[in-house]
Image (tube, rainbow, N blue to C red; front, side, top):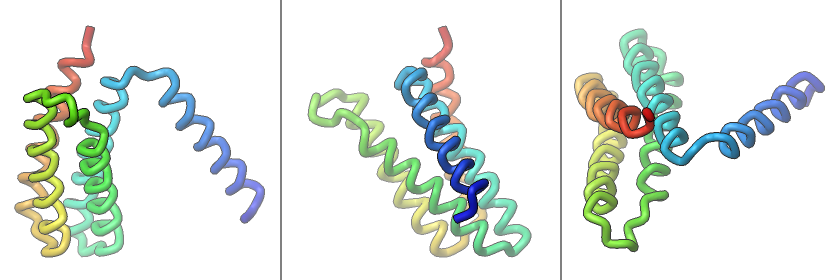
Length: 128
């Protein structure tokens, strides 16, 4: 690995640690939704331009984010909200996995709309 790549990797690691240590959990969730929405837009554009590698990478990364959001929910508390979000994230993840496998642009667009609604809701919670 070249010195510049190693330096950039180290910088990215430090930056990521700074973000996690200075942001509230709600702010981190909103950042994840923002990123997932950008990734789905990238996947849709890649699908339109027949860029299969970018499509699969972007869709997979968005799927990983949705699964991560599901994983961090406190479902043991029995909270109705946690249970509802768990079901929602599970449905979105399953739909995204299927849409990715089938390269279904319409399904990806629908999933984007769902994630964008959730993103908007999280942003409204995050605002003071």
